Every structure is written in C-alpha cells, then in structure tokens.
Length: 165
Image (cartoon, rainbow, N blue to C red; front, side):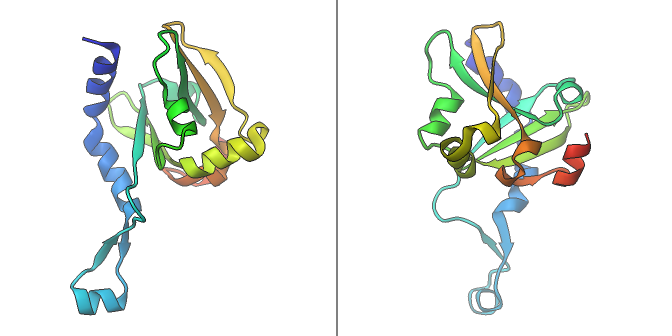
C-alpha cells in the first residue's frame, strides 16, 4: 500500500467530523424573497465549485505547534505537492485540524487559499513561510496563523485567543 493510501485512509476516518465543522460555513439563511417565493430556508454559498483541502494533525502536535499551519512543499520523489497545487491556483479553502487523544478534532482553522496566494505574491515576508524537512523524503513549509489572521475564513477560537496560546 502506498504512503498516500495509508495517509488517505487515516484522514478519511475523520471526514464526517470535518464535514460537520465545514458545513455551516457553506450555508446561509435565505432571504425573505427566496423563502416566500422559492420554498428555501437555506442557501449554499457558492460562486462555482468550492474545493477544500483537508489536513489533520495527529495527537500531540497541538501542544507543540498550536498556531502553525504546515503545507507539504516537496517530495524527494519529485511528486507534485500541496504547495505547488495551491500556487498553481487550485483549492478554495484548506481545513486544518488538530486531533486529540480520542481522535476528536478539537482545534481547527479554515484558511482562504485565494488570500494565501495573494499574500505570497504581495508580501511573502508577512506570512513568514519557513522550510523544514520531515526526514521521510518529504518537506514542508509552515507559518504561524497569528501573523496573518486575515487568511482565516473561520477557526475554533477567536483570533485574539489564538495569540494568547
């Protein structure tokens, strides 16, 4: 079984939790007109397809890196990575969550990738990407979300609380 298959199988075990967290950010209460004329109480927010990358951290990472967002940036194999796909314009949002010891997502962020890309173009220093090797043939960049809270669509805590952690 490939490493991708192993990682995907592990991540998919938590897909229902991610859907429950992300779902409310895609729904809006309908207007009076839509409700009274079209029998709709809720409207899905969309201006086309919204694609959402999902990244979960295993238990223990939150305690060491509570505000860091990591994105795989290279593989020794040369395979395309999340960062290159994002830079190429793919993805609308990324959901980034931390699991606790009971495999419950207890801390999460939804990041707007359009804002992220704009930040890379305008002022990469503000986002402050740092490079790191995993030691397993993969590399990633990371940044502290408290340095650029404008990237957030939503999070499990208010930005002011994030800074205090």
